[in-house]
Amino acid sequence: MKAYFQILGACLIWGTYGLFVQGLGYAPEVTVFFRFLFGAVFLVLLSALTGDLARLRPSSQTKWLILIGVVNSASWLMLTRSITYTSVANGFILYYTAPCFVVLLAPFLLRERTEKKSLPALLLSFAGVVLIAGQGSAGGPGIYSLWGNALGLASGILYALFILALKRLPPELLGLVSNTYMCATIALVSLPLAAPWLAQVTLPGIMALILLGVLIQGLASTMYMIGLRGVKAQHASILSYFEALFSIVFAALFLHEAITLTFLAGVVLIIAGGAVVVSIKAKEESVKSC
Image 1 (cartoon, rainbow, N blue to C red):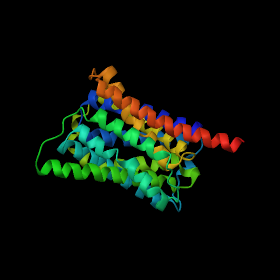
Image 2 (tube, one colour):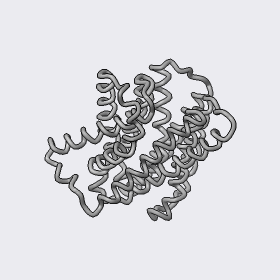
Image 3 (cartoon, one colour):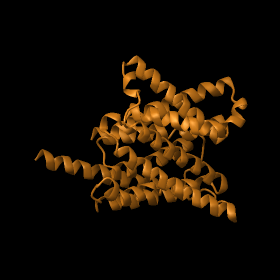
């Protein structure tokens, strides 16, 4: 069960991301660039202090690690543009179709058996996200809305491929090594996009961005990838809905965003979906112990 709680712990920390974004007020490309830049710097320093720097040397898996980083950076950038062309709610609903694609593709790409017991959890959690995010605006009509919807759906598909690609890595690379390469790749990809706004970044902003990179990308993402070693891709993708839940809860607590009955209904559905996944794992371990 430890791996499952590592996934949930990572989602809890990731849930603070919206607070950083709202508090800093920088262009999305700037926030993304510094998140992954400082994440990479922190992980390299951590590797040096713990004597694990040799693990970051190029190997036969390096090209695969870089490709995974490119896929994830494309997912982030498409999500950002989807939100720009439609709305935050619309973009994230489409982004969180990723677990659906993981469940569909895992049997083919990972040879994971599709679990019928996981399908109710998937439906419950996705319905919860739709209820929560559905309180936002629907976005404007026209070609930009259509393009934004297409980008949002594409970001969800790419995020699903990112999760599946991580599961194909050797377990010893999942964690510090995979996260370091991913951070470095995304920082390089997003640098040209962030460059026009870099002069606007202040010293207090840099300090907050360092905290963002260390906490959310350095620690939480590494913990997620370590947890992924012992969690099926289908289960991990469903548990990722808790990131959306924690994001909305923190926004309500610290940004004074409204809590409605619809929101509470969404919370119940997401928690119910997560409870189903954890109960499936608990039953599996109970059977093994017998």
